[in-house]
Image 1: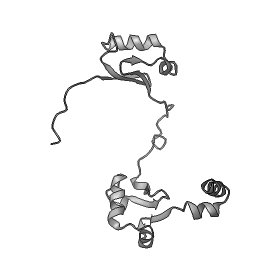
Image 2 (image 1 turned 90 degrees about the vertical axis):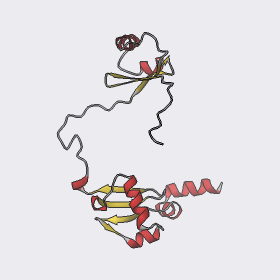
Image 3 (image 1 turned 120 degrees about the horizontal axis):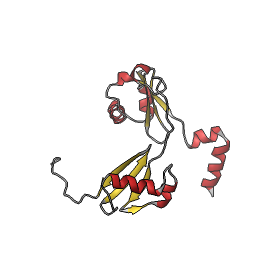
Image 4 (image 1 turned 135 degrees about the vertical axis):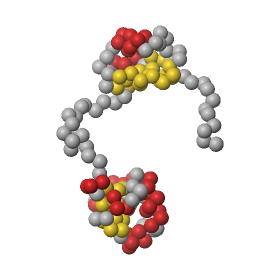
Length: 164
């Protein structure tokens, strides 16, 4: 009951929400590491470096801002000169984003998933035949996206020992 009341109150009041949930803490601002903020959230420079590497930043010079979120994760914003250009930046025509449809799972044709695509069952069966599949028995997973079918065969081989 108390948790419910606190939840309702924090939805209605920013002050209560900040007191209960907290607020993000800026750790890097305009490329400068804020030592007081690191101490406030109780992390050291090694933790910050590790989190930056995990986010793909191996050089702090690439980071404009870093924030410790209230859930404990650190978010990074790259400096403009280090951020990747988008298709829009490059003037590339944008296509509609589509989800990948799983059309076969564990050798079973997923009729409902097929009905949610722009193709019909017969088209998928024909395309599978063109790729050399008369049955679904050897197919672990087949996916469809943007007019392309990708097939993952069942493979019972032992993995190689390349990592030992």
